[in-house]
Length: 72
Length: 299
Image 1 (cartoon, one colour):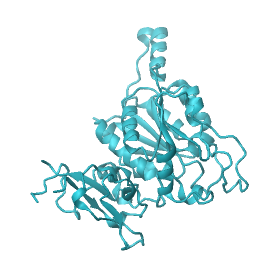
Image 2 (cartoon, chains in turn green, brown):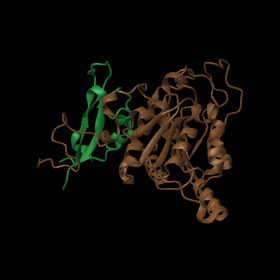
Image 3 (tube, one colour):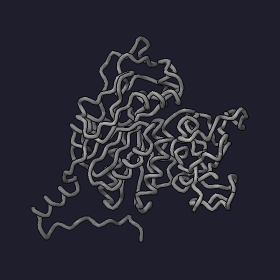
Image 4 (cartoon, chains in turn brown, yellow):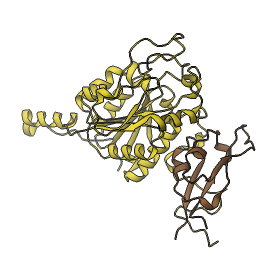
């Protein structure tokens, strides 16, 4: 199972793609769907690979995504 | 799959709270920065540095000038000051001298700190005033339309230099070191972990500390120079930046497409302004010198 998971606030996203590019385990991809402002937010494509490192959360300029690790 | 018990409570992705939210005024979000702008990333790192520093947030104040980065004071959930153009450091100096308990952070852009407020910067560094200066350098005056600023590298096209900038630019880290700063570092928005650690370090260091953060400006800098969007700038930083701690700052000048030297360049201890003031006054006046009482602190 995945070590962690990401939470995305779709409406706050501006679609810059930083999280998608710099995710070390390539969990995310930009979605083809739009949010209400017309941006493409990221979505989880391979959630089982998420390590919960929260690097996406550190890169996000819009505070729209973060990762969390499951407590063991 | 076992029950999802998380380090950070995450009952469902709909109700989850981002760990930086307590440090920001979320009622003001979404912020005004463009898609691909790196200022949000630096604020994110700053919020995490505040979290890990363990400082009492009632004793931290943030001061900004004018410009894109000047908006940070309005978004940080701290006591904040959005001052006139270029005067962030004088306001911060006054704040620090009247209430020395406060940890004063100046968060502003390259145009505000080095063009309009350039003189204030060098004098605060000379006096080793105990303030922490974080300069988000997007290499242009972004809010007013992308004019040539003091940090714009040569050969770059800007709104006021349609044939390319011919003036030499400031090397901000060299300027800070020469003026006498106690701590000088440079990172880019690509180096989030290092930047956050550096910010945490300066929050615990005494004296004038300066961190320069290179940030993408897709709308006004990169568009004119055909440098792509914010993500392309981040990939560029990843490609060309070299970490060289303690490198001589004179070798760290920025060019349009050349190597970006990042790292911690200076970390030295000098007596700060308040210490020197108290030392001299005590030596001269002895018992007649009373340390000014702080009247505006809590309790």
